[in-house]
Length: 459
Image (tube, rainbow, N blue to C red):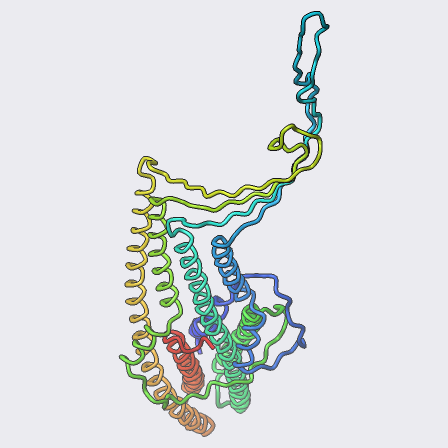
């Protein structure tokens, strides 16, 4: 086999799991502590990734933040209670005195208010919004819808992670299987070299034939080394998605033995399910509703704000009591306050306009997403049908290649064919086995992609 052909095939088959791991985000979850060598099925890998994935942990934090924000906004509709305290040192000023002058008597001074040098106040204030122009109600609904959208986005991230893990897992399976096929081919070429050397010693083959097989064996050993490195990189990529240390070695237990005979999926039913179950479409619908609540929130600035306020005060001195005395005395007050912005240079109108445009933007984004999901589902259905046909054709090709190799080898031993024809038969056999492995992996991934696009693998 020509080395460039094998190298291109190897790169094509194994680049996907390596690239998939290159974008794995990081977080601060505690990693598991398994053995250095892990033997896992694909479903065990999915469970492990859902437990320890750093990217999914970060997505979950977004959900918790959004829920806390919704509770914060809802709490603004409830009463607030605030306590304040202050103590003040005043400057020394003359007291307030009254001077009385009577005939034939010296002036008499009466102190009406003495000088108070210290002032201490404790105050408790309770406030309850009575009417906010429906601002708090709209803000609370918008926050709840945003929290719901965050949860649905987390579901989408979960589905993406599940598919990413499956993709990396089957990429590792493919890399190991390709390595096994190359090892097998190295054995065939080595056996071929032994046959040619014996024929050369008997004078039935030329030195050129021996050198040609030796070159072929050297190229296959180099490809064997590259395949081993690809297996290590694929394992590291999978570990990255699972939240494991990159020096762990994952040994896949699941095998891709699909025959492509699964029952077909109806296109209209697949699209309908995707439009009903895709979490990102549901999340966008929630954001649409939140944008509409944003319009109501902006309009609330046109209306007055009414609040009930009550105060309980303990002060020394308390100036509400006359005459003022240097001792603690309490008092209370309760009031209803109204504020109404009558003119703000149309700032509120511009805020309403922005909110309406955001609603239109969300509606346009939803239409675009519906088209994208529909196209994705149909494309994945086409890929699945193509993968089925590839499996059948690849299986037939392997049978033909094995028979061709067997016949050619027997003819070569009998001196009825050339060394080049046997080398070609060995190359063709390896190519067909690689193609069959690739077709089986493509089919498994096509099923996973279709499930993801239909919203099926979020559990």
